[in-house]
Image (cartoon, rainbow, N blue to C red; front, side, top):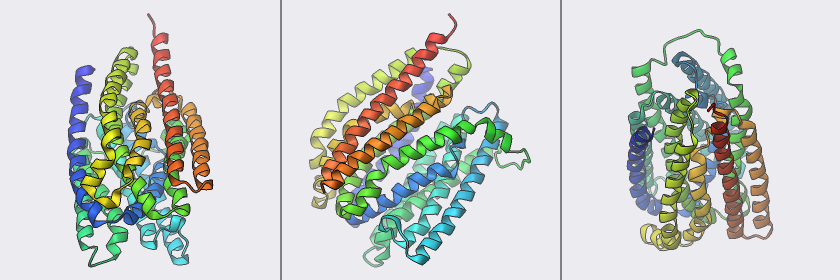
Length: 421
């Protein structure tokens, strides 16, 4: 398992490092072409999109990896595609009505409301293809798909940023539209790989209702858990955008991007490979504790080496790379860093509840986290202190991440303990 894990993780990380390296280089230009106000508005848009994406497939795509056969995996993909298309069409109709009647959450412009269902749709289909590739260990395809997605988004954002002084509208829609086109690029590439190698678009008349019933826990517990988790993670941008100025949100958004994105890349990479490998070991009734313990120890040691350097030098590095208009970003990076460090390890094992069918407990933890995060933000809003709101939010999030990690490790310990001698 160790050799296979290192090889597959290395493949995915290589693709992600290339993709994020391109994005980082582009950010040195984008943060001069767009203002903190633009980035603040863009991240408010993303906050709503990330919540709605959870609903688009009811999380049935996550069952593709553990499906009993390739035919069943294909039908799960078909079910996910249909649900995603239905929700996206519904959101498009709602967005058009809201734009016509001048209704807008968090003061989003009408054009962004129209873009929102498009991003939901292509992100949903992209995720389905990701899980199909993960099932068949198409890690090279996943790595290239990430590069295609990020490079497509980056190129279009740069183009819109350069045109923004001429066409002022691009200040508003340039960053979100780039994300839409990026997901379109990733969607088309992974679709090509999946259809060419595994034929998942062959017509079939197999009924989907029995399949949905079989994996109903993903809709019953995983979807609400992910929905609550996504909503509570994006709560600062949704709530604070109403009470504080967009430039403050822009500074926080930049800090969130440069802490959450690397953390997400690492966690998603390890989660994909571990999910497939751990599922195979559980199906073969093999022990897990030694491999998982070694993974947690090595990953935690690496984070402890790098984390203090980021904590100390975040502010001067951000100002040097992106200019004086981003002074103050370092404070938010320091607030978020402990949470992100724990989150990398915890989210790498987030599939454990799916394997052992303990999604209900995961959902309860997310509800508790949402309530604590809401209370933290309300304190900051009541005191009109944006920085305090973010600090309390990050502290609460870090504590819950520790509890989640402990819960995942306990389940692995219990599984090993119950194995026949």
